Amino acid sequence: MSPTQEKRCNFCGRPRNEVKHLIASPDNATNICDRCVGASSSALEEVARKSGLKAPTLKKPHEIKALLDETVISQDDAKREVAIAVYEHYRRREVVQKGGLSIDGEPVEVEKSNILLLGPSGTGKTHVARAVAKMLDVPFYVGDATSLTQAGYVGNDVETLLQGLMAAADQDIERAQWGIVFIDEFDKLARKSGRSASGYRDITGEGVQQALLKLLEGSKVMVPRGMGSRAISAGPNTDMIDTTNILFIGAGSFAGMEEVVERRINKSSRLGFGGENRRQLDKTSVYKQVTVEDIEEFGLIPEIVGRMPVITSTYELTEDELVEIQVKPKNAIIKQFRALYALDGIDLQFDAGALRAIAREAKKRSTGARALRAIVKTVLKPYSYSAPSNQDIAAIRITEEAVVEPGKGVVIHRGVGTA
Image (tube, rainbow, N blue to C red; front, side, top):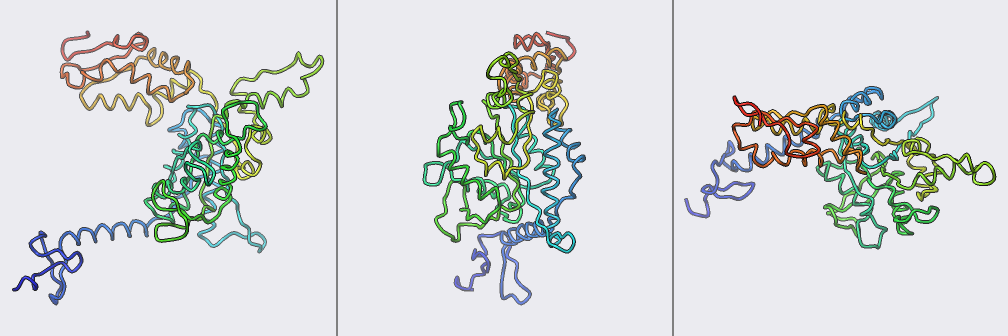
C-alpha cells in the first residue's frame, strides 16, 4: 500500500500510526479512530442530558422555606418572601410550557416577580439566593453592581450579567433563560440627588439603572460570547437572550437608609413640642419599616422599583444566631474545618464557650456572618501548618481561651494525654 493509500480516520484525518485503534465501516469504505469515537460518545451523552432535562418538581412555598431553613439560619421574613416569589416565578414556567393561562376564556399573562433584598452586610442575602438556585437546579450568577457602567463609559455594560449567566448555563440558551441573576451592591446604583449620604453615584448611576430596565422588564438582548467582550451587531459570536423569564434579585445593605426612614417617621415631630418625641430606630427596625417611597428617596428610580415588586429584608444577626450559624447548617463553618482536620486523623473539637467567643468577636465587626471564617482561621492558625504532618496528635480542643489567645487550645496526643 502506497503512502497515499494509507488508512486514515475519515473524521479527523489522523493516519493509522497516530491512533490506538482505527475502526472500519462494514464496507471498508470509511474509518474512524478511537479518539473520534470517544469524542462522539461524549457529544451524544451531552445531547441526551440536555434533551432529557425536565423542569424539577416545583415545591410549594412552605416546602421551599423548609429547605432554606436547613442551610440559612434565621431571616424567616426574607426566606418566606423569597419562597413565595420563587414559587410564583417558576410556576410561570409550567404555564409557558403548557401553552399559556386563561381565565373565563381570556388569555392571561402572569408577570414575573423580581426581588429587591435589603439588609446589612453578612446577613445571608447571597446565601438565600444561592440556596434557592441550587434547590431548583437552575443557572445562577452573582454580579456586582459597582462594576457596571452606563453604555459608552469604561467598565462593564449590563449585558455582562447575561454573559455570566450564560457561562453558568454552559452556554445553553434555554437553561440560561430560566436562570437567576443576583446583583450585589444594588444600592450603590442610587443617585446622589434626593439623599444626604455621600459615596453614591451621580448621573451615571441613574444611567445604569435605566440600562437595567430592559433586562428586568423582559426583552431580547444581543449578548456577546465570552466575559468582557462587547457586541456591535448580530453575528456568529453573539447570542440573542430573552430576559422575560430570568429572575433578577437585587441586593444591598442600603447604608444610610436609617436617615431616610427616620426622617419619614419623625416628619410630624420636627417642629414645636413634638420634637421631644423623635424616634431613634435600630437597624432591624429600620429594615422592617422600609417602604417603596423610602427606596425611591434613597436614590433608586421609580421605574426600577416598579419592576422589583417583591421587597424584603434580612436583619442584623444576634450573638445566638451567630453561634447557630457556626454549627447548625449543612455546610456550617465548624463542620467544614472538622472535616478537613479529620482527613489527617485529627478530631477537631470546639467548646460551647469557644463558639460563643467567636460569635462575640464577629458581632464586633461590621461584616456579620462573613467574619466567622476569618476568625476561625485565625484561631486555628497555630495548628494549621504543623498539625497535619504530626501523626501523634489525636485531637485538638478549642476552648474560649484559645479564641482569645490563639495557640492556647488543648492538644491531645495518641496514648499520652494533653499538652
